[in-house]
Image 1 (cartoon, rainbow, N blue to C red):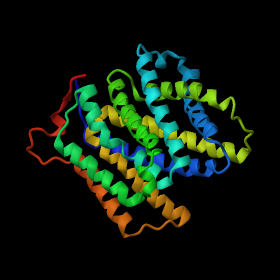
Image 2: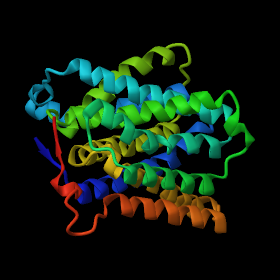
Image 3: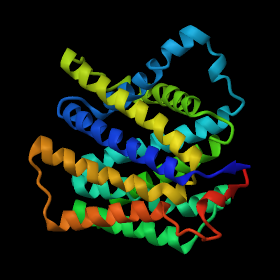
Image 4: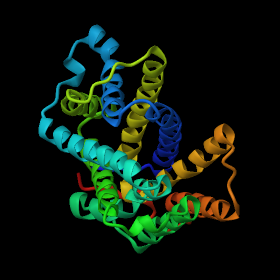
Amino acid sequence: MRSVRPLQGAALLALSALLFSLMGVFVREASATVGNESIVFFRNLVGVLIFLPLVLVKGFQPFKTARVKSHLLRTGFGLGAMYCFFYAIAHLPLADAMIFTYSAPVFTPVLAYFWLKEPLTPRMLVLSVLGLIGVFLVAKPSDALFSSLSLVGLAASLLAASAFVSIRELSGSEPSYRIVFYYALFSMLISAVPLSWSWQPLTQPQLLVLLAAGLLASFAQIIMSKAYSLAPPGLIGPVAYSAIIFSGVIGWILWNEAPDSTSITGAVLIFSASLLSIYHPKGNKSTPESVKSPL
């Protein structure tokens, strides 16, 4: 039995979204001169290295697990989503690729219902769709969104949603740091394969940018894993849409990409969906705080 704490989970998920948005700044900077294979590999390599001090102090004992297969499954979902997203960025307009990235919360309630038997309500589905409409208004996709290449973007969304649910399932017995460690370790080993035929020498500035991206991604992963251990993905998932708002603010500050009225309307919808997903009137017997997971 596991109690649900939606407020804490939502706050952590929002912080994770902010860190992922900041990571995007460094990924965007690196992608101008560094191949996707190197970006993915070094992101995961840094994720492994940040656990090195813990290994040196306490040995491998904190990372012992009886759920290697579950960690491999979570890695498959997460790494697959990452590669599909990078492919979408390379072949679709950035706005279209972002649509697929942040449409994952639409699928998480349904996947969590069938996989984990988490509660699924019309309210969850409506708020997920409301947030997705906000994403469309902010990103302003082109006609390419409906091309055959969009199937890759759709795969990224489904794989990302599966990764979120698998984190929730793993968190029943695994602490957040262990989930992130095995994800980084397995992802590093797998992503080293394509790097073997696409390796390029890196300069010191490039390495520093990749290091910053990897650190932000790792801490964001740890915080996200903790968030989904506190509340079901279907309940707090719309909070992940806040990354669009954070990205918009960062783009405005760094690149003078000022939002128009449509983007502002979309941001309001995203923010509203995020707040409503965790707000339930007092006296509601089905309030999330009383929900228990069967896991």
